[in-house]
Image (cartoon, rainbow, N blue to C red; front, side, top):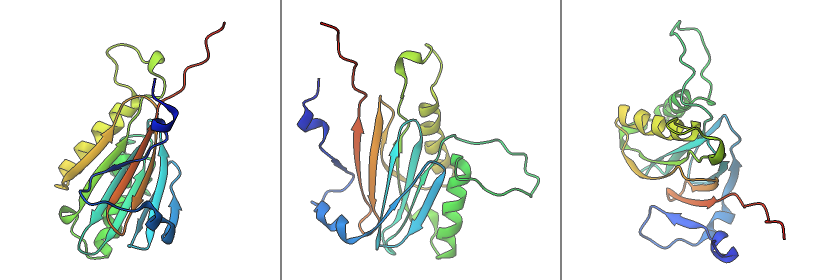
Length: 189
């Protein structure tokens, strides 16, 4: 069992330099709910909480522009009739929405760095053997989508059991991830 102190520790990921989390207090805070995405500049931090959902972060170092999604399912398999509104609840469409906004700012997606988070198994005792749970499907879809667009994946924190809290500092491209495993019910005496 993990000690209570260790379970509250934030894991700074994906950068070699030391960064003071107090800096995050100076940024405009955006909290993403499932099915949302956000594109912003260095004045923002973007946060979310993920279970089986997945977040993709995109960061352009030269412009210090970034984007983050919080999607629920890999795709809805739309037949391309040319008439539909993109929906960020689906990974493929969330990525299209983020890329479109970055393109409006003149950003080539292949010059961005991407990171992937989430895809946790929230109900490990209910997953049937040999079947892939939705969190794993979401994480694999995120990898495939980014590779298909030629966007380098510089890091990921995927799968496992429980949920994650994520903070993305758009000014630096740093992402903090804190994974929380579900607590076990107390044993009767």
